[in-house]
Image (cartoon, rainbow, N blue to C red):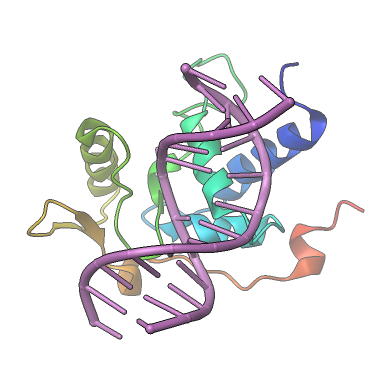
Length: 130
DNA sequence: CATATGACGATGC
DNA sequence: CGCATCGCCATAT
């Protein structure tokens, strides 16, 4: 157990919330952060996905967690370090029926008005493990 | 252990 | 309404 329980709970919360995203829909890092009760840490949500295990044996990995459905609040796929991953994410989204538009600068945009998934935040619903 | 960085977001101007 | 800066905090070096 490398990470503390608190961090592990955060990771778990993020992955679980991401799995709640319906097929063919997308949401933002900030919204995920709000859903799990930490609206001040949208960056950490990205960290969780970056650390997402590639091990098919793991409970949460890049196959069981639809990380591709998580983009930034601008409706643009976050241009991380390499364009390959970004393009891979766009391809995965299109495979689900999500239309991805390529901007003049090569930014991959998704129409949040059509594919955005922003459920109401009910504290008694997400934070019910009391 | 101190500094830098990042798959973000809000705010200032 | 686009760009600069700050805040947030786990990881990396």
